[in-house]
Length: 423
Image (cartoon, helix red, strand yellow):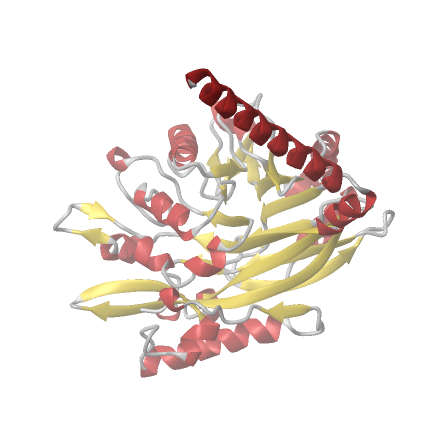
C-alpha cells in the first residue's frame, strides 16, 4: 500500500513538472513569434533625452561666512542657501557650477576677497543641492597656493562630485567622460590667465606654482591662436574616446560687462568649429546673452551661454552700486540622441532667472537663492518683503530682457509642481 502511495505521488510530481515545462516552452515560443518580437521592438525607445543644467559663480564673501556659522554647534552650514532651487538642479541628468573659492582647510583661515577659502560645508551643500560636476578652473584657483588646489579637488571627490578644470597630476586627462543613459558626454573647464610674469603663468596676477602649472586648464588671450590649437587637440581626443556630446565650461570675459568681448566671440566660434556642443560661461559676475552658433564646416548647431552671472555671492547693489551683479540663472539644455541613426541634436534650451535674497531673521542674516518664477508668484513663501520684492522683480526683468532679446528659441523654465520646495 505504501509503495502505491509513493508511486502515485511520484507520478503526480512528474505530471506537474511536465505541465510546467510545457507551459514554459509554449511561453518561449509565444515570446519569439514575429508578432511578439515586433511588439518588443516597438517598446524600445527611439530617442534618448539628456537634460543638462548649469549655473554661474558660487562665491562666499565675509558676510556670508558669518551668516552661515552657527555658534551653538561651532560649525558652518550652507544648505539653506540652495533650498529653493534644489528641485530644479536635482531633476537634471548632469548639473554643473563654478566654484569660485577654494577648500584649503580651516588651518589656512577662512577668507573671502581677494583670496578665497571657504568651509568644506559649502561642498556638502552643493552636493545636497543636486550638482554633479564642479568647475574649479577660475581666477581664484590658486588663492591658497598648490595646497589649496589639491585639497579642493580632494574635498569634492570625497563627496562623490566630479571635478573639471583642475587635476591631481598632469598625467590625468584634461577632461572627464560621463556615460548618461548610454551616451558618452565629455566635459572640461578652462580659465583665462592674467599677463605672464617673465616666463611664469599667472592667475589674478599670482604666479601659478610650478607643481600645479600643468594641473590647471588655462589659456592666454595674448596667445589665443596657439591656445585654440591645444584646445582643438583636446576635443579630438574626446572624440577618439567615443564622446558624443562635448561640454566646455569657460571662465572668461570682462567683469561687470553685460556683453561678450571679441575674445569670447572668437573662442565660441572656434570651439563650435571643433565640434563643441555646449559652452557655459562664468566670471563677468553679470549675465551675458545666450547665442546659437553654426559650425563653419560641419553644419552643426551649438550654443554658447556667455555668462550665467552670480548664483551665490554677496555682490549686491549696496556694495558695488551695480544691480546686475544680483542677477543669476539656471540654464537647461536638452540634447537628444536618435537611436536609429545615432544622431545627436539639440532639442531645446530654457532658463530660469534667480536672485539672492538677503534678509534678517532673529537678528541673523539669511541668504537664499530664489527661483524668481515662484518667488514673485508667492512672495511670502519665499520671504520677499516690500523692499526685496521690487529688487527681485527688477532682477527678473534685467535677465529676461537680455536673454530673450532677438531670439524666440530660448524658453523660460516653468514653475515646478512641487510643494516640498516651498516652506
